[in-house]
Image 1: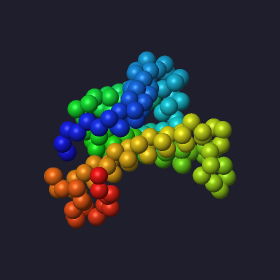
Image 2 (image 1 turned 60 degrees about the horizontal axis):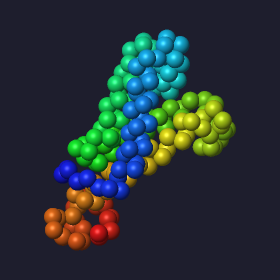
Image 3 (image 1 turned 180 degrees about the vertical axis):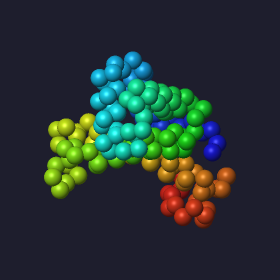
Image 4 (image 1 turned 135 degrees about the vertical axis):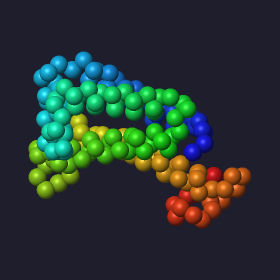
Length: 159
């Protein structure tokens, strides 16, 4: 992946990066009660998290969010790399939304009042996937050519 700064990435990278970075920084000072709430929510969706105590889980989540936020904000991190990280993070959040009882209306993907905050994280998934698709399209095109080459099977429109 070559370093290619694209102006159209910056609104998304700045908005999401600042939001995720702030979230991670605020979790650094989470009290025991907040850590227990976060840990409980994650553990109910992902039972493997029960192996960690609430404090450790919250600290690791904080580190992860700070790292992701910084990766989105730093111009030398390629959009494809940032996209993979953002997609993985947001897929985890959406997995919590889908697995946690009471977050969705019965028999539907539509959120309840309680699940609205997690359901709205779908926009981060869309941004991450957009970065990945654009990177795959760029990789599919030989240098100096205007039409996509064959290889990855990704249908990309010529620029």
